[in-house]
Length: 380
Image (cartoon, rainbow, N blue to C red; front, side, top):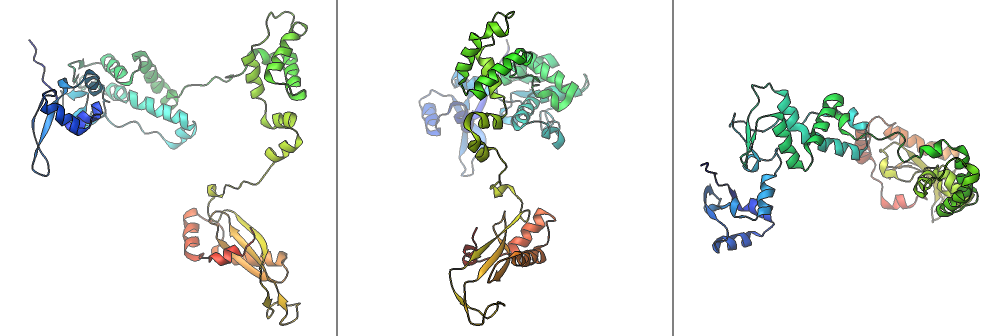
């Protein structure tokens, strides 16, 4: 008769598995509904901690404990090492993925590949060892894991996938590396091969949708009405979903110009200036403008104007688009290209050209302390 050793866990693990409040756990223990005992661990205040029997928890909590990840901490791991009890970690770390490999895929594809790589990491580590050096593991439930197949079955149960799926990921990783874990997309995804081979049908659809500005439903009805004259040998026209997918793939500028008019095309599709300055680097783009002060001053500087005459001076300023700091200024009675050159010269003399983002940011934060009143004087 085999005696099964009872598993004892701390109150923190009980609350994680059941979602109960610690006070509720202690009340159930006082009522005798949870088996508990005094542990060997002592708190900082000198009190002895209590441990609770895993078998006295609900079945859902017990299953949740048994299905914990392989790479969890030793206190709650689902496997116990028999061959080397002193080993600190169950498996080696994940294979390193280089930056060029990740740049080839979208963020969603990278998340998918990293998740699958983490799930097959025990298989990769287990297969890298020789048969004699492979350890034997035993789960908390008593299942022995001695081979690749038994380990794959256990991992499949842990991650809620089939063992065949894990073996496919494993084979693709051994063959193609990190790229093999990303789902391959068909080159003709969301494309109708039938419409691609029928130019007359495509011409009719595009004319109805772009020229006559009909809805997708009316385009479909028109195609069904004229189908016999277009393709007498084909019994049925394409489905409504195929036509809608084809029309959605048309270039957006073409759709805007044909269905919404030239004005909407100019406002939404023609070249424009990006105003998202937060995506820029400091000292990457400078902008300049003139602004006239709302005050008169006595002229004792500007040439071409009589002395002591009342003048509203103009300010020509050069602004760093990212940091919003004024890098160069020049005052004049009448702004011109000369004042722009003077303000630009001040900025270049003080800051220079972009060399590195760190150097420029440090120089800007150290040198450019412009008062609020001066920034408000500039007409943006």
